[in-house]
Length: 117
Image 1 (tube, rainbow, N blue to C red):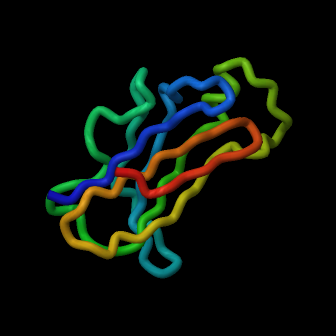
Image 2 (cartoon, rainbow, N blue to C red):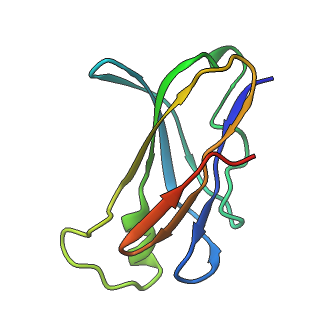
């Protein structure tokens, strides 16, 4: 069955990014629809997939990782506004029933992502 999952690694500390708010949106043209809001656990992962079952359909999606609050809670001194307050990743699901894993590696001034397994 198809599903979308994620995890967050704080690359500056070499630790999982815990208690970070993540929102998943479906993107249709210029319009976005909120599908799910979750928080990462102590392992930097969500307790369940962000998207699965009947809601898992091909299309364009957007993840919003609210990393600024996490950085501030971790004691990182950020300028106002923070360089990376929210990290937004848009991605497409082309296949019908596959696992899309979209991890995020963060630091106060950079991030990277890839399609994981």
